[in-house]
Length: 263
Image (cartoon, rainbow, N blue to C red; front, side, top):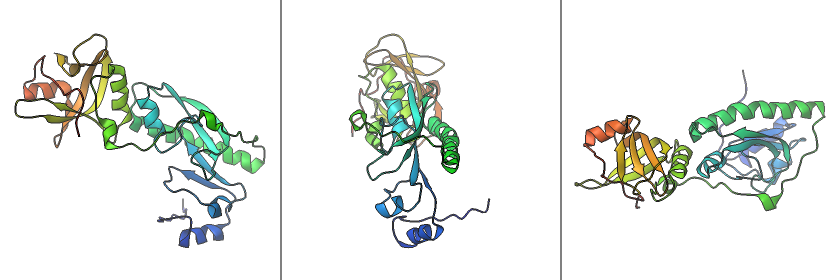
């Protein structure tokens, strides 16, 4: 499209900020931008700086709103267009809509979906800015705010003492990083298993124990219900169905995973 593109280490000073000043933008749009915009940038455009955030603000402010919502068992989140202020994701809301978090989709798929849905929302706001018929922005209620900090490797550890539904949502929430994992207890030593897809089952078993092996995968006992490990990967190996892992390692009912993965 002939658009100018610049990759910069910071937009708040130096050549990038100088170029912004030369452009004299009417509005600045920020999406998935890792830098905090300082006062000089925030005050530069006539219509301010706008941001797309995939949550129903003020809920899930921060770096991982989709992942944290999935991991918390949310079935509905939202999409928000807001004005940027110096405080993290706390600016007034210009446009907002609810967004169902499909239970069959993981965070990687839902993040892509959020981008597809959020882009036309931002275009609607820009068009209304151009027509000067945008409704007044709605201030966020900080008392209702919750936070979604960045994910860490520890967030992917499966603790089979937790309910199966919660573990299924954790597996969904930590795709594609850091991914869920657990330790398979073997006579020769523990093997780390990365879990790419899992589903919950009715029933009861001892946490961490393989109760049955189905065509869909390995069914493991949890604190409540059963977790079927459908798509798995031994560290350093290819992704494979859970049943294929069981066949390759000659697993049987009664074999166990550690209830929680250690450091």
